[in-house]
Each structure stands twice: as structure tokens, then as C-alpha cells.
Length: 326
Image (cartoon, rainbow, N blue to C red):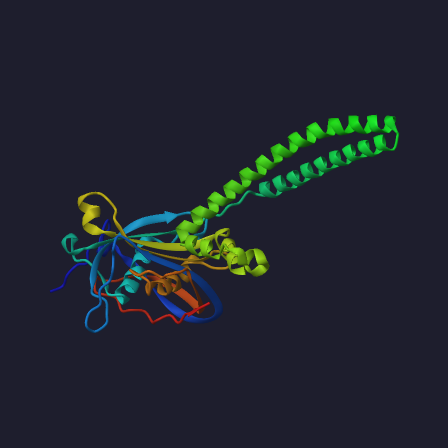
């Protein structure tokens, strides 16, 4: 008997979806994947070693737009993303539920472009002003030293002139330095908050904390610096949140069971070209804990063809993506 998969907040019949095919190419992409589990969630294996099947409903978590218009992601609709997600979920024996009664997971798919810290030069200008204020304070200290030297050498007139100059400069320089330091701290706080937001969103937090140790202060911190560079640039991302279906639908509460996050740098890439690769690299971690941030290198290109309408039969799994840990 033919059955109709259950799509939460959208019907399966509405999925007029594209097919994506991998093609040859000389380009490459590095994806960053982090996956976590919570609230005691654990996958169980069957006697043949495969995971026990679990059923889900799929919901649109919406797109978060970046700073600028980007047709490569703005024109990719949820049904297109959902179809690719469904194919990769099937590889891990997750299946679309036929109805609400059979669903035990509510999967919410969110995607978008990060908004990194960008002060439009304000932070650099504030730093320059702070350095200038520090130099001014240094000049007042030189004037005070000159006063003492003149007095010690028996030149009271020179000492009086130096004292007057130092007094006028010192009050102004000290006040200016305090103001510039406070302004610089404000920019640093803005930068830190933006970095923290993106680190949580992309799953970088634990890895950054792990790399933030004495080794980077000794000139061995390339890995830490690379991570900070990642979260301070625009990145495309897809996040799949898995909630307990019954708790979400009956109590209106979201009990998170697992979450998988995958991202790539936006510069030099197109979201529509890289989406299939991103999901393929992340799919092996669906419902599992990755232990660390996984950076994967993929060679080749991905092409998205014209939209095609498909029925509700399970789609064939795409060819496996060859990856290796960087």
C-alpha cells in the first residue's frame, strides 16, 4: 500500500525539488562540522550493525540572511534543502514519518549566512586614537623629567617653564587616554559578543576554548587563530535541530535531543553549489556526538540542476562523498 510521508508544517506534495549531481572540477571546499547530543539521547544498533530506524517530521527553521543580498542562498527555498536533508538522513536510517502518530523526532532545519563583527574601520581608528593618547601621556612624562633635570642643574626658569607645560599637557592627556581606552574597550566588547554568537551558532565554542591555552602565546597558536578567523568572516551554514516530537507537539516545549551544524566560508563559494557537499559531510554525524569540531576537505564541484517534481517514494541515496580529516 502506498503511503504519504508526513512533513511537519508543509506537505510532501509541495516538494517540487531539485536533483543535485556531483561533477568533476579542480576546486575544493573545507567544511566544518560539529554535532552534539543531549537529554540522554542515544541511537541503538540492530543485530546487523545498522542503526535502529527512527521516524521524524520536518519543519522549516527559516533562513537567517547575511549582511548583503546573495542570490546563491537567497533563491534556495526550504523544499530544495529539505529534499537533500531527507536523502542524507536516510543514509543513517532516519525515515520520514507517515503521520504525526508515528513520528518520534521533530527536525527543524535552519540555514543562512553569519554576520561577523565589522566595525567599518571604527575599531582600527579607535586603536589609533588610543595609541595617540598614550604617546601624549608619554610626552607629559618627558616634560616632567625635564623639569626635574632643570631644577637639579640649577636652572629655575627652565624648571618653571617645564612645570607649566607638563601641568597643562598632563591633565588633558590623562583625560583623553581614559576616554580612548573606554572606547577601545567598547569595540573589543562588540567584537567579542559577535564572535561568541557565531561560535555558538557554528559549533566552534568548545574547540576555541580548547585551543585557547599557553601554546598559542608561545607562537604555537595557528589553530586558534584559524578558528577565530573563521568566525570573523561570513560563513554559510546549515543547522539541524532534533527535538522530542511528543514534547514539542503536546506540551509546546522543545526538548533538544541532538543538533548537527555544518558550515563553509562564504567568500569564494556559492551556497547552492556547496549545499550537497555540506550535508553529505555532516550526515555521518546525525544523531551522534562528534567529540570535536571536524574540518573536512572535499575535492570536486557540485552542480544543482533544474527543478524536478518527484513523488513521495524514497529517493535513491546519492553517491558517497570522499572526505578526509584535515
